[in-house]
Length: 176
Image 1 (cartoon, rainbow, N blue to C red):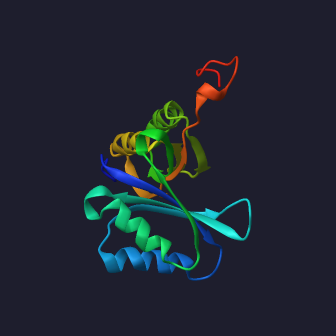
Image 2 (tube, rainbow, N blue to C red):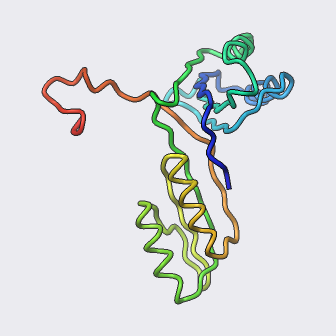
């Protein structure tokens, strides 16, 4: 289980979608001794680019140094720094859980409370999926510990800046 970290940087790095770019970015962090807490990468809506979301431990390196080093890499197009308090962060968890017939409905109810899904059903196992904030995923994972966890996988975090609701005319922040 991943423990909650309180101080981290969120770097959203737009890179050219080419072979070896992720290895160069990860290698930079490794060579400099910077601790990557979470890493997620996927193509963007423009197939020429991928976005790498990197969660960096505050104590492992000064932010300015991390950004300077990343900016030196040839395939890096843009680096955005997101303050965790101004970002929407999400993560996904998949878990294969061993359950008896008696436990099955209880686990399905727990998954529902976390707005998750049962994505695969076997005779004595369920595969469940929950997406949410890192804290939500931590809480769900703690509650799963009372079951037989066969296998569990968490994605890296992805993040976007929070929207500025003050720009919506006539709409309240709650409905925007």
